[in-house]
Length: 113
Length: 112
Image (cartoon, rainbow over all chains, first blue to last red; front, side):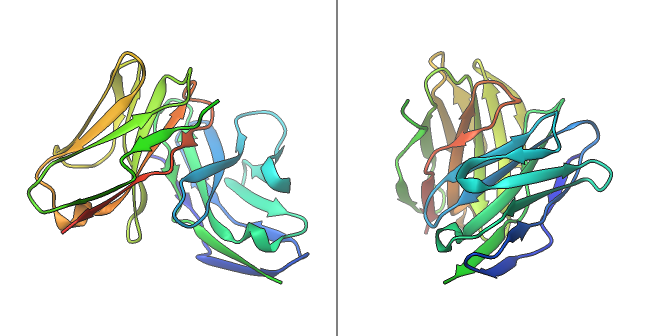
């Protein structure tokens, strides 16, 4: 079985400060890892993925994520947050041998001006 | 390329009725997945289709069913609707299972 944990329901940061959204995962095999963002009344938008290779993955809108196999983590980061980054963020995992995505509960990010 | 489209965007039904939701994937995408999103349960996987075959199914009752057509378009059906089926139903498509899924805007189903 695969699962994802996002330990923080909410993250609040000031504009211009670094943003980190935490994610840990559990899979039986090698993971495919993803981050998505959801704006109100919208579907999910893909931000970035980790399949293999470099542990630091760069994605859309200046976001990046670091894969840490020993800690089974895949934290999302942005060096300088914008008010427009305020949204709901989901981490997702898929076992390499499975076809379904398992999502975390989501983290609401609020960036204050 | 056009994104994933879902119809209808909003639906209001009463208990006991059935409903069919439609999803058109991005052109060239052969994998289509469905998810249910609710405030209490979050995002839950319903099923995934590839080339008209269901490859995986989530933990939902048999009232939830789906299918995929030869043009990769997919439908999901919920029979004997219950109040708890009120949710945002999201469809996502991808080229292969390892690639990211791209989501449609969702169908908001309200069961009264």
